Length: 429
Image 1 (spheres, helix red, strand yellow):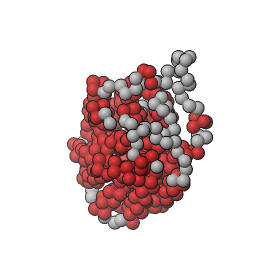
Image 2 (cartoon, one colour):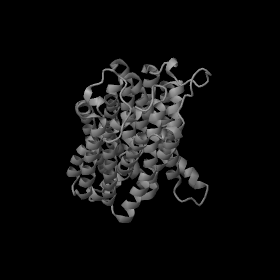
Image 3 (cartoon, rainbow, N blue to C red):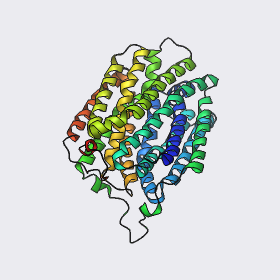
Image 4 (cartoon, rainbow, N blue to C red):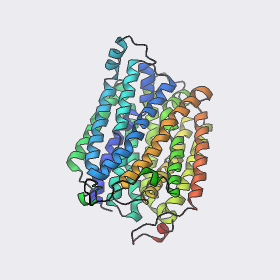
């Protein structure tokens, strides 16, 4: 792998997720405490983000195939910076909306949170484009490992981001958003000044040239490929289960794990530290475990192993009674996510070449985003109408479905790796 070209993109992913990680632990409690958001309204904040990302991800993927990865990364990060600025001014702008005297179903501040999350979703091509960048600069037999490094950078951002956000929340309700804005602005500058383009003009899908073939494969043709449909289904079901965590975990921890703590800043700090442990376990998985596991088992078997770990983690959280136990359960949760996501992404890229990898990864991201649209809805309903623990029982059931689909995938014939240097274990996958 080209380490010189990998380092800037991994640093960009790290700082970008660091900024996002700052706000994740505090956003639900911020919406509830500052703007009177209900559980359903708060969980639907995630739906608005992923609905926008679902619509935009394939489009951004095609743009990156045609014009290169770097410009798409720059534009998407500009959108993230603007979204975080809107979070900072959600209170004042919300008061202006409230002054209009309209009969709205939520406060003006909540409306501004929706606007910010939607904008971030529309331009949220950072990770998908970064994944396409990685596939450009890594050989096929090491693609899962390269994509795993993106997940490691993702996890590293979550080591520091949530704890940083919890600490900043003690300085004021908007302090974490100011911190996130500064961090993501730094990410944008890193991209502009340090990142080289990974997709040269001769490898781009230049459909403006009549001599070139059609740049993107029609969606109907891709969806006729049975194994690809199965991979997308697994990603959908797993994401449907996973979406319960970011949508409801802060509320779950506040009500179940820390019911006697009256200080919101202290609760947010503890939640941030728990998510920091999750990020640490994810980095450990990516840097120490993913490469030998892919070499030994291949992507498909490793995917099944990851689903088993997610199942155990979901059931464990559903029955656990203490914050320490739940924190420890983030280890199998991080391992499951850390090995299943790179495996699914690497398998997806087998169905195309350099000029269509962005499109394929965008399609995969759309399948995930579609699940993440509906995930917060069912999670919010289960949390409010049944019980906070019911969220994780349902998540475990969904993971079980994903495990069954992963078992079916083991029997399917997939496109072979094209590199001549692939290890035998990988080629047999």
